[in-house]
Length: 567
Image (cartoon, rainbow, N blue to C red; front, side):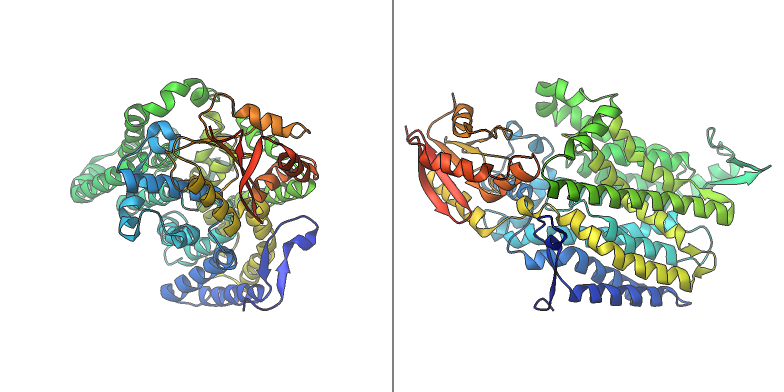
């Protein structure tokens, strides 16, 4: 299959190094057709539907994993370095980086992979994205069964949500990272709470020609029957509280944002009438605040202005997440445009699902729109390094997938036209999905030459050295992370004096000093930051001619220089 004619996305005249076998489009078509056929059967076939949905996720998310030689995303290799430090030293260093203030992910992975050696095996890094995507599918199915179904016997909509999720999840935030585990655990909390609460959905209905919902702002107070019901479900309540406490403690010690988002989503579920108690939201929120105040104090106390600088500035945070990312080369701008267009289409289609439900049934189920909108509060909190908008979409995507199902599944099931539409949309969305997810391949993929060059750097540099990169988009720090000072240069130094700028960045830093220059770094500066296309060549020539730069490692992927001698 992988030797057949291939689709090269670079043919669209922007340099996206994404090669997808054309035969896989046929596979997508066949899978979509089979899935719709089984979905239209009178009886539910969960194993068949699950296998088809899993196979579809493997095709769209796993193909590039097979085609590429090493794990994608330099940050995944950085996380491997954090895990390796825990393996070797059995401790964490919050001063080393913000990630160590939320160390649960690194401690767990270090414990899991310590028997395999002193580092995380590369296949774990490579296959982590598909693992997390597949692990989320059953959780999404459980949530969808509680939130999407508005009539008894309708099992099709939850399965369709499971089908849509891999297709619209282009964000690439499911790699070997704390956020991936935290999102999986957070969705599990919502699934457990919804399963144990067993409350019917709250609806907006039309009455007197107006859209009304009794008790929307003032929820119905529990009466005698409710009190008896609560007493009868004390064991369930204890199980609910215990499960939520354990999972939310894990989430609170894993990621900065996820527990607060989950707390807000649980609160809106209570507001929508799906939960009998506000307690789960309080448990998650208070646990997160306790950890931030105590366990993560080493991170935020020295940087109070940076942490709280974006509070109450949604416009600025939105600009940092969108406007500030639309620059760079023409190729990069095209990728950004595809991402924005694809995301906007998904959001509008999800909104269309809500409207379709109202037009069709004269009612709107509250929980899903609120769950999808709840992460938006992050825009009022912080830009998150310019990734605030991206994080909002990552948290909203599972629920957007559920809202999309309302366009296709009705009380009568999935009609022929709707089934055909699902197949057509699935195939049509694959190309923009590929561009959106893999459009930055020139600097997001990791090559063997890059890893070999970084390994040579660590072999050459004695402990205490200063290591400098041209840009942060470099697969390094996967070993000896605490033994050196790692720095990144001023990425916008595009002029002819770049070597002087690099040397100035190293002033007052420990010796010996090393500079590593790799192709992905240069591609990032050109494509994402808008440096002239000739800048990498100019930089290489300038560094090669500089008497203060001595090449100590070199391969087709780049060069390592010793700067200014060894002492």
